[in-house]
Every structure is written in C-alpha cells, then in structure tokens.
Length: 164
Image (cartoon, rainbow, N blue to C red; front, side, top):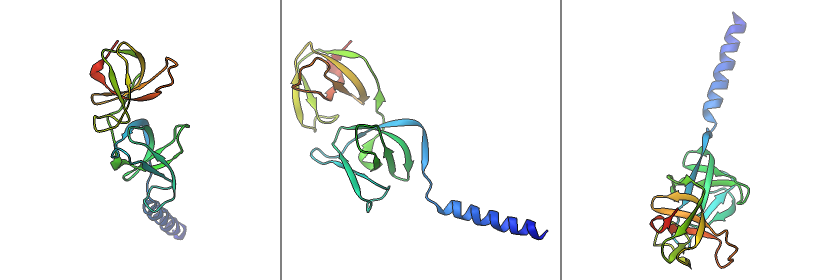
C-alpha cells in the first residue's frame, strides 16, 4: 500500500511537470503560409519561439514557407533553402496551395515581390510567355521562370492573366 501511494505521488509530479512544459504541436500535414510583411520589411526567423530569442535569418515579403510545427503564435520553418527557425505567424497568411504545371501569360504581366498590387513590380513578363506555377494564394500565383531568361527568376502574378 505504501508503494502505491509513492507511485501516485510520482505520477502526479510527472503530470504536473508535463503540463508546465510549453507544448509544441507537430503538424500532421505541413501547411504552407505566405509572408505578408509590409513591402520593404523582412520577417525575422528566430532560434526559439519568442521575440527575445536570437534572430537567425530573415524572410522577404511574399516568401512561401512550410510550417512543420507550432507553438502558440509561432511556427517552425525548415525547407533546406532558407534558414530553419521560428517565425511569428501573425505576419503570415494561410490559404496557400501547392500547385504545379505551366501556364502562358495572356498579356504583359507584372511580376511582383508579394501577392498584391501593393508589392513592388520587379519585371514585366511578356505576353505569351510560359511560366511554371508553384503556389496560389487568393487571386495570385507564385511563378518560376524555366525559360533560361535570367532577367527574372520567380515572383507573384495576378492569376487572371494565366491560361493553360
């Protein structure tokens, strides 16, 4: 009977300790989010999920990231091409869909830094150009240039100016 009481106390201590540890939820499916900081501002990537943690990198507006786990308002990113770490999710938006394929531009098309007309125009893609599509967010598509033309590589375009 004495051993059972000790076990109950031990189990209670373990449960209390477990509840005191900040919980990190691992996403069953990776979710994609787009960075929606104001044009010209980057989003800090931090070592730990808090604002006092060391900044280990920065993400530009319009960057699409995959979130593999969350902790409160923070999401963990790692995809091999950007530094890994935590970002504050209030500066991102859900609704990004991963897509693939190619499309043709139906008009001269402004390539932008982010998904909206408030983001800077980086280049004008000529009418009839073929682009590879990677992501969609609302009325915008993230495209990649596979033609070998090095004047532009990737960015956001208005989806209504693309056709199969």
